[in-house]
Structure formats: C-alpha cells, structure tokens
Image (tube, rainbow, N blue to C red; front, side, top):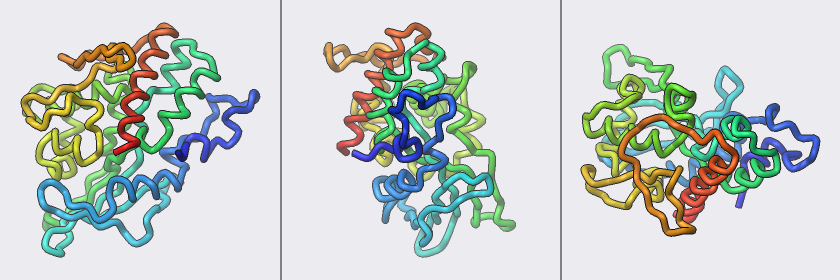
Length: 263
C-alpha cells in the first residue's frame, strides 16, 4: 500500500534522515491528494442531497505552495459553494512522539501504517458561498490547525471526534467557534453518524448509527490485541508523555487506520 510519507521523504529510513526536517505529505504529496479524491470524493452525493463535483484539474497549488483540491457543491445543477480542501493527517503525531523520547526507528515503524491513505482525510481551507448576494468568501477555516497543541487535542483524532459529535448534538464543545466557521461544510453531512460514514471513520466508533448512541473509542486505552474496548466520556486534553504509553497509543491508533484502509 502506498505510503505518502515515503513519497515526499524518499530517504526516510536512512540513518542520516532527520525527522525534524521532514516534508509533510499533507502539503507536498500530489499523489496523496489524487488518491484521497478517488477514495472519498469522486462522484459523491452528500447526505443532505447535494452533489460534489471535483474540478477538472484535480490538484491545485495554492499561494503557499501547498497542494489542495477544489470542488463545487451542486444542487439541481446549480453551484451553491466552491470549496478548497486540504489533506489532514489523523494518525499519531511525530511531534508528540519525539516529545515522549521515542526513537527514530520506532517512529518510522508507526508511520509505515499511519501514513497510508487511512491516516488522512479532507477539511476545508476556504469556502466561497454562492447562495449569498455578494458571494461571501470564508477563509481561516482550519480544523486541522485548531485540533493540535496543548490547549486543544494534541492532534488526537479520537478527542476531536468526541468534541465534533458534541457540536452536532448542540452540546458544549471546545472548538465550537471553529466548527461554527465550518458549518457550511459540516451541515452537508446533517448528523455526526453521517459525517463518520461519509469519511469511512466507522473504526473510531462503536458502530452505532444513532446520533445519541454513537461512542468514540479512547485510543489511549482501547486495545484490540487484548480485546479491551474503551470509549471516551469527555474531551479532556491529554497525551502520553512516557515512551511506552505513547507507543501503545500509536499502535492503537494504527489498528483503526488499518480498518479504515479496508473500507
């Protein structure tokens, strides 16, 4: 299976390779964007009945030299929105792995799985709204950036999904302001379970399609090898700071990514 980290870092296994100077596939891998379009977006009807149309030139380069995909959202052949989408990595973070003093070889080992297609998805960077009289332009929409860091979710995708589910249910959510800015996009999926299904994220959940009963796996303690199933009951930010605990978290995260690869 294609590894997109290797695509932009061909010497990643060399002893001299410095992880701190790595290229980011979410910015620099054209192949990742092409494959994500085929996997997630091609000729896709959205849960609310609108249709995604990918622009003829599948992958663009934005003003920052970063790849993106541009789509139109149509209804009855009429264009409602134009959206610029960026790839987002949803696996265990190299940054926090280094903080936990994990060695390069061990980090490369988890990247062999986490940087396959199941470790990525799309979020909007900008939206042009043709339903408004002045074709309003929304930018600075980055869910990707918002979910990182100490004050948010340390790039833990399970915590992000728990928080997003709270927003869909109208409950308190840590990133409410960010979701509100992205509501044109998020409203295309109508409910959280439909968002999960559309983006093939079922492996992160208990599989329930009822928006009031869907649960998110806690990737710190969820362990399929030992048949330990654990679900989140809050969005409190935490990340393992010890080597063994972070390796366990990365392994649990990869088990879900492997499931997603097969969808």
